[in-house]
Amino acid sequence: MLEGLVTEDIKPEGIYVILESAGMEIRKVSLELLSKCREIADLSGEVLTAVIAGKETERFAQKAAAYGADRVILLEDDRLALYTTGAYTSVLNRLIRKENPKAVILGNTAVGKDLAPRLAQRLGTGMASDCTGMEWDERYFIKFSRPVYGGKAFLEAVSDAYPIMATIRPNTFALGVEDDNRSAEVIRESTEIDGEDLRAIVKDIAMTVSQRPELIEADIIISGGRGMKGPENYQILEACADVIGAAVGASRAAVDAGWIEQKFQVGQTGKTVSPTLYIACGISGAIQHLAGMGSSKVIVAINKDPDANIFNLADYGIVGDLFEIVPLLTEEFRKL
Amino acid sequence: MNIIVCLKQTFDTEAKIQINSSGGIDSTGVNLVINPYDEFAVEEALKLKEAFGGTVTLVCMGREKAQEALRTALAMGCDQAVLICDPALVNADEWVVAEVLAKAVGQLPFDLILTGRIAVDDGSGQVAVRLAEALHIPSVSSILKLEAEDGKATVTREIDGGTELIEVSLPAVFTAQKGLNIPRYPTMLGIMKAKKKELKVLTLTDLDMAVETAVPKMKCLSCSLPKPRTGGKKLDYQPSEAAKELARLLREEAKVI
Image (cartoon, rainbow over all chains, first blue to last red; front, side, top):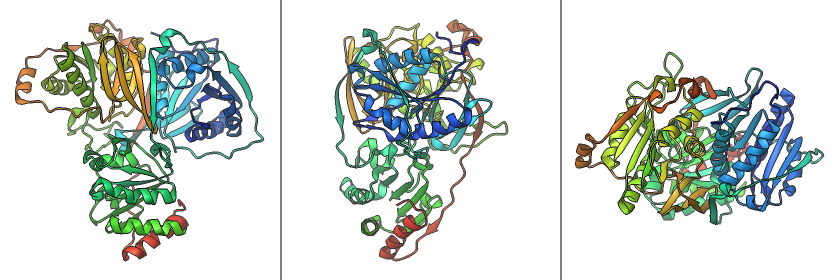
């Protein structure tokens, strides 16, 4: 059992954001976290450090600086080219023990959800998952707000141990202004990875080829439910999605009917999303679905049933046949 | 193959959430179920048992009432169950839960551990990964397919925007994602048999854990309900007019397009 890092003689310092990349770019959620943590660093007088693990990481350093990092630590190793729990936990654990940060923040992505708890346990510290709020606090340093029961309630959580750790839901914080005049100290750290760390090997990766944004990071989502009537009809939503740069989602009813893959499911037993705009088509608004999308900024409902629950929370509602309305709407969007 | 399934009893996903007078979540009258994702873990464990023989042991930390969830899983075909129930664990965080489960699991023989990728109540998704760490074994999250053989497993896991094929040495922890299988229902015969199966209830003392070792690292300051959303504008026009007006409002009023 490991003890926490708090000792009387070494004071934890600084805020660390673990960045994630997708291809040649830093993921949007990582930049959102840098922007927000820059604010917290300014309020608290802490130094903001971005950490990037992987292969050819240097290309990300300037972008991290432009979004607010004071320091960028590169953990460069061929064996970190693909994410694996063991190797990433191992190198980050060593770095964090050496640097002794006050807070370590990650995105609530597939990688963040897998890495952060493992790292937290190895460091003997707590962690707040899938936060939708994070503010500087004089007493607790950072206070987190996180949804429970699929967003039907929220907790305010604080940590009694250092480093304070959390994963933050994508789209929670706005991107700051990219400032190319900002620069950061770039530090290369050595990596040590042993056999124990490589007990899981990635044999293959199959990415869905799509021009559409990833569901959990999308600014706009157009979703179809039971009212879609069949798998072939998702083309209507896809056509609309392509015009406005949206991701396509679905309710559980549509997934369970086999019309669309499970990875598109939004709801309490699917993905939780918080886009700027959520367009619900043929979705009645079951409590489990609302749990997954209730934090969307603007909600549009298109449904034949005037009594559908979704109208009780939609900002804009159209009672009508989605097969008629959505293509018309697509045309209108095209004109904008 | 000896398999452990870590299971949690949660509120039904239909449950309406209310805050009680002491500021916590009110569980009065709420229907309790097996965490939906843990059902996939139970099903996968039973399939492995059918293929390779061995036992499926349920391990759960929770309240007395969680015995109901364990009996249901026993009725599905699991062999035995352990419930860790102790008043000192009321405010346990994920760190504590993982330490407690690791202690309980450590007393049992196992080749692999299965559990749900997330519990639908706290939604934290940490415990399984932390448990693997506490046991010093690998873990793979959010699996959609599992093929186990002697000392090794090949799994497909969900990642953002695709899937990943991973080969991992056993023992390991796997967390089940929806799509892994379709959980079976308990049969009448299963329910009858389950009544006679062993269900041990343990305290921290039984696990040789001092209450002081179960101090959480995280604490909850308060609990609140989200601001209720109220219905906005209904666009009562002919379809083409309604579509036109909606596009305009989204651009000019809401400024989201």
